[in-house]
Length: 147
Image 1 (tube, rainbow, N blue to C red):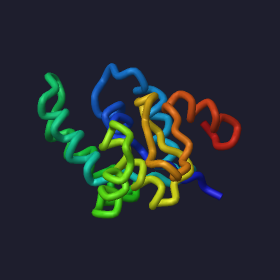
Image 2 (image 1 turned 30 degrees about the vertical axis):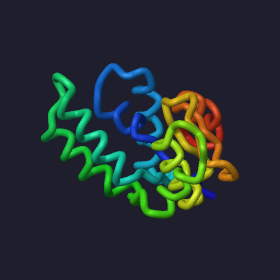
Image 3 (image 1 turned 135 degrees about the vertical axis):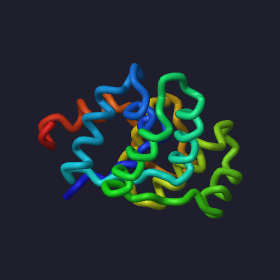
């Protein structure tokens, strides 16, 4: 059975902008997705948020970003952050609204893991999805898939 993962925006940025903390491990994860060893979910919000960051990061190319996203859309499942996810985030009292909405999306998409560079990522109460950094996920998966 293929492991299904939810990718936080910062994992996308890890592969699009050089010199980020989890760049190498995030590239390994994307390689495994490309090889169909992992199934991945990314939100439409993550793509628009990453676009904003790329446009405001010196040395990053908006043209290269668009090419990368076109390629990425062939290998990941793209999901919207919809009304149900927003409602889940509103119903939870935790402070990070964005994490809650994305965590609800991961749960609704039946993902086993949320991969994020945010070590304090929160899912809404009652929505159990394991949260791991790219490095922790790569280490956990070593031996289970061909890394």
